[in-house]
Length: 110
Image (cartoon, rainbow, N blue to C red):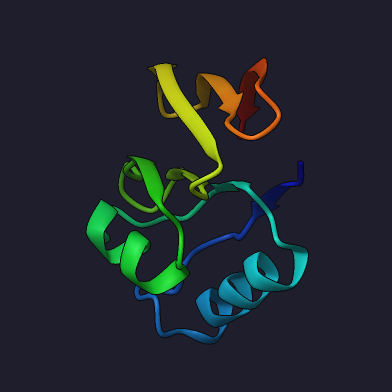
């Protein structure tokens, strides 16, 4: 199982920016199954936007407050994420790797 965490220091406003294209390449090249992106500084992008552009199967978003914060928790189809709690500072999720039948808790903090 592979995890990717990245403080992107701003998503540059849209998923076509060089920074977001780099994120898409990181996800593909690392074959990450769970992706945590912090400091997106974005409150406009939707779950559907992320699913379509980043080739992931699930997305949870905590929008930025002004030009601060913003969190995304993304996953591929072989991992089930149940976000139990989230705030502008963290995600707390229960995860199940579907093929390995391994369960674990995941805390992602900005």
